[in-house]
Image (cartoon, rainbow, N blue to C red; front, side, top):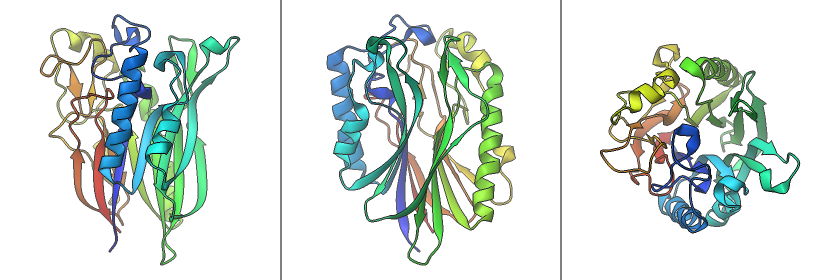
Length: 295
């Protein structure tokens, strides 16, 4: 058996550290952080990724630069932090519009070691998407990196980020069902599958602060464990939150938190442990989750 460490982490485009809040969630600021804070977040993200020493990184919300993160190229910074890894990527947003000032581009990236035999990459769009401020489309995908093992077998590492602010999770459930149909087809074709994601669906209890439950209630949706059958398994770390609400800066015990980030594995993947790295949301509004697998 061979062991691999796999990490999933939503990086909040480098702008969503502990001091950030954003108007989209009821906060004070349209641009969530100062330029100095974004640079500090990015340095912290780089160091955290180095310290993890993971084999595979499934990362969401990497920006090449936009107004929201003060034009800092987070994707380039992450690649610099992982020089021995190869990158696959896709953009969820890409809006040149009419002025460069309004450009907004960020998405997902998967990093695998340079000595892996990556024989195919696939970007599969979901059939439904959401719109921010009812105007800005976010295109949602399953980003798959296919790795061939020495014995000729394949592991498909799937990176995804489901919709977030759709009422009652209607879009999320459609995307989830689309995803499960897709990965089961991969398994039928002989691939083991590991999915790392910001599911935007919670597992376990949500720790609401004050009146936040009323604010977020219409967006809540539980992770559908019951839809995983035939030996497929979901893996979360229930002890530590992975997401904090961004309607105010983070204060431990005075912020709404939940567990929404984790993994799904096909039956031929053995999971040894899953751990959330508790950074107390210092560099992003998500904490990273790491999983040790055997195959």
